[in-house]
Structure formats: structure tokens, C-alpha cells
Length: 228
Image 1 (cartoon, rainbow, N blue to C red):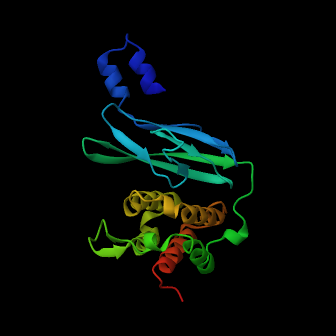
Image 2 (cartoon, helix red, strand yellow):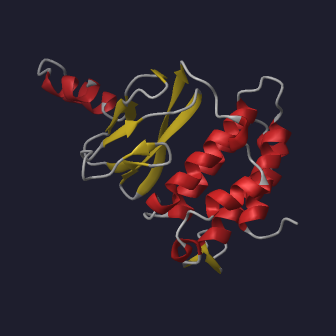
Image 3 (cartoon, rainbow, N blue to C red):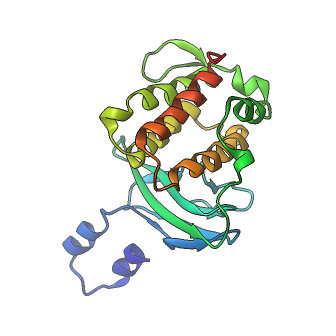
């Protein structure tokens, strides 16, 4: 790896090593095939700590070493992998996009609809949905399900200001990292279903940011029990 290699090259000056080591990076391929496992590594500067967001990757410590992640996709598309790291109490994010090819996009019966969202939500343990937390932005007491729903709603309604699907995704990934906290495993299957459904719109070249945002709003309203 770059940082490890530079550290071992004793002919480089200490200043050079210090400068180059300040670039956190997710090491791993940028392209992959459907149903093919990919290993990723989080390389950080000395003194920094961090971890992967497990939205798309497996970081279970029982079979994945610290600082690594296992990525595998069952549908073609672009997947944004996000990690968070801390340097001197400052929280920052680093990301990598992996383009997956060689298989079909998520099937139509996995599309985003009120019925499907409720079906996927039913598989999340009730105690996880109803867990009361303090909203990281408003400070109000709210269930985790409603906090997640409100996150989708707020970002979906801000689509015109954000201006792009990539921007919506980045905002969502960043916000959900805080809202979900450390207990993300219970929501993983739900998240995977949502991601696959969103791919149906994202991979359609005719789709607009407004159409994509409308799905965020539908997800948010369903989680909050606001749809008819």
C-alpha cells in the first residue's frame, strides 16, 4: 500500500512521508463483477482512527479484520462505499465508487413502492424500529425508524437545491451514518432492498433527479406512516 511503502523507503525525507501520508484512501478495485467478492482496505494517516460504513460492505469482526471490508453486489450498478475517520477529534468522510457489471439490474418486483417498503421494513426487529434516540440535528426524542424516515424526507425535499443524484446519495450516506449509529446490522437487509430499488431509477439514463428524490420522499413518508 502507498503509505506502507513510503514508510519503508528510508531515503525519503520525513517531510515527504508526512505530506503523502495525509491522504486517507479506500484501497481496492474500482470495477467488479456481479456476485464476485472484493476486498477493501481503509488506509489512514498515522494517528487517525476510522471504520467503514456497512451500508454496502461486510465488516463483521468475526470474519473481517479491522480496517478491511468485504464487498459483493448481486445487481449491476455503481456503489458508493463510505468510511469515516477521526483525526484530532475532527470527523471526516472518505469514499470510493465501485462499478459492478456482468449481471442484471435489480428486478422490477424490487422496485420502490409503499407495499415493498412496508414488506422490507417488517423484517427489521420492532425493538430496533421503536428504539428512542435523540435526533442528532434537532435534539428531539424520536424513534430510530422516524429518524431514518425524516432523513429521507429532508434530503428528498431538498433535491432542487442539491441538484444531482450523486449529491442526494452523498447527503443520505453521510446523514444515515449518524442516524443509524453503531447498530446498523438490523437494518442491513432493508438497506440492501432500498438500494436495489433505487438502482432501477439511477441506471435509467432518462431518469431525473426529481424522480430519484420522489423515491426518497416516498421512503420517508412510509417510514413515518404518512402515506395513504
